[in-house]
Length: 308
Image (tube, rainbow, N blue to C red; front, side, top):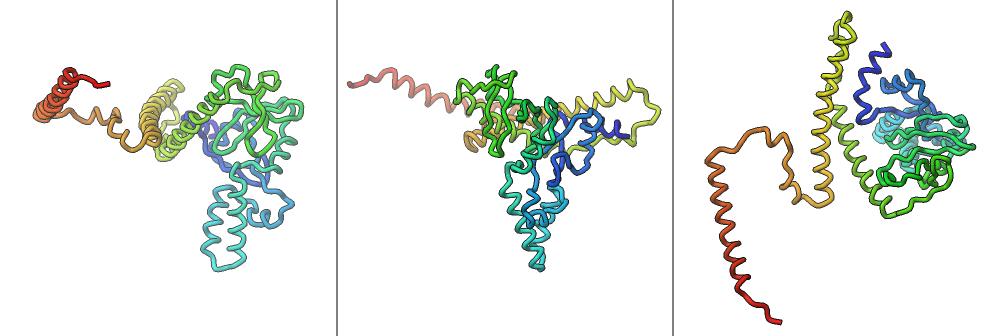
């Protein structure tokens, strides 16, 4: 059953997996089908969004809730007439706002203690999965931002604070600052756009229909099952890339303004039908009418002189 569940979500690796953290431990997540992949492959999954146990009011407000449960609790407490619940909801909301980086110093200390020296694992933060390791007692994240694509000597980034401004290192963990900060900035902006595309893809992915494994016959051969999975994967990939093109156009609209949308033609719009001959002739005559004033204007400019 676990293998079937894992295969059912493999296609999500193209866009991202949905995991739900709990604030009580660096390896505590709400159980979801997505976690099965890490369990089957024996890949440790960590996060650092923990409540400091010394802050009693936050501990009480958050309790053993997962992130999704805590958001629901905050909404419920705001609507409650019980002043104590309203206070708990306010404290919980303040905790989420104050730890928007999804990493606390208590969580960072727990991470440093939990991760073994030389261990390769996955670190989850802000809906991103990063490869993490520990070298000489220091945590490092694998650099994957597009801004560092041409920085061959920038491989790792240290994780030593919650602000995300770590030190860059090469493959031997020697300090290697980026050679061109401007290039890195442009790359980070591209990464933000990619994150926006990823968010749209995740939103679309949640709306897609999952494979109904109950309808697949039990006696089906591995070859037939592989063919069915490949057909489904091809269909999803085609739909995914089409959504990516549309999302990329939306990014350009955000950058350059709404006027850009008039020049964007999606592939689906081209397939829906051809223009009628009458409309084609009409558009052609309109085009000739537009060209005539321009040609006369060019001729007038050619015959005119410039006074200096």
